[in-house]
Length: 269
Image 1 (cartoon, rainbow, N blue to C red):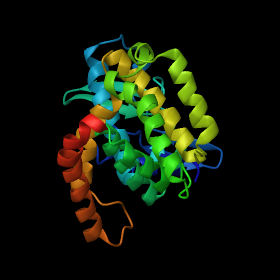
Image 2: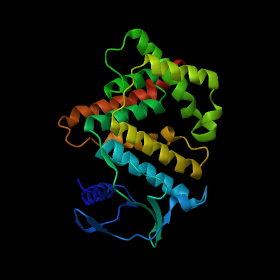
Image 3: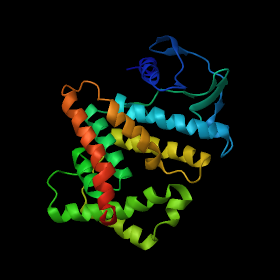
């Protein structure tokens, strides 16, 4: 697809997210695109902890949850210059610019990311390892000993970040020597492989978290998206999914497990 087609597709998707929009495309050809002009303030120009930045952060979260978990189509260049805060009679809105770098993910990967997000929020490390396997990040023939080791490595590497948030707080939560040991073990012992789409997604998440930390230094990404992810799990079925009934039952079972069984097991997780 050309950029005009990508922008129109993304604009249609964002109609499902209140107070988030993408500029309209008026005309295009292989060499040119005419798009709606939007007056606004780039998020990178808004001071830290400003009310506009705080409101925009919530809208960014909603937009990316819609993109990752439902549409399977996300904006992969979401720096503060491509995100505008606009003010009108009906309040503030977030405008997303520049659809030159958009990425598709399969519906199965979108479902897998939803499950991974919920399991990370629950600190359910056994299920996190299984999600990595289901997403193809790890091979499905890992030995039992490597499965156990992967669980421990993920808990030690990802756990402190989930508990304290990103930025300086995350850095201060790690012992440098033990972190280096765990990263070395993960690199050498675990055959982790990320497809290009997930590398782009990781880049986008890092950009969004940087903006969110400017709005709130105590920001914790996974805990922030949990309520939205849970609502999506209860109400939405990925597009082109034939067996919607079974999927709905699976998701309800997953949320039940997260709310009850993971809570009961949390001291050992």
